[in-house]
Image (tube, rainbow, N blue to C red):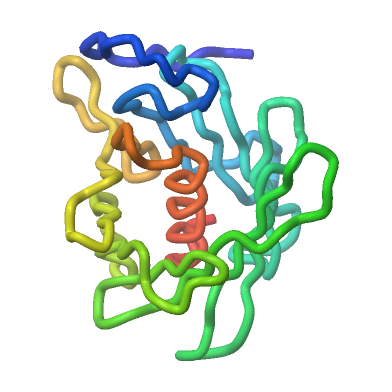
Length: 196
């Protein structure tokens, strides 16, 4: 499989908590909002090493009611379902654990103008906010309860500063944020904007 060469990143200090994959430091992913499958709708996520790390494919229509977030081997990690209509629309996200049934993880709803609210399963209040959701902005942030940015999405640029297009993004995830959670939120935002 072809590789997307990443920009050189600053080395992060080694962590003693290495058993938590994706929690070691600030990490950047390249998100290409196109499917790897011919005539499919979805996106591909490239890891820091430039190889395909995850993919989302929706074999139905664009913005389908159910999509799956998979690892490079095709194993489902997250299932995203659209529920409700109009202003009551929400996206319910379930996580797959090794060979088990999908368990509810978080829900995304449109909030005040330009934002989406993320609530974790079992919690009644908002845990994260995504700005820039109704507009087709390619640059936005995911903020925690305290308002600090825990993930940022921006157009991908080459080392020379050339923007690669509206459908090639860089996702930078803070060390304290669950990387799979941040990637799931980016996919839901793509579904909200019907770019998947």
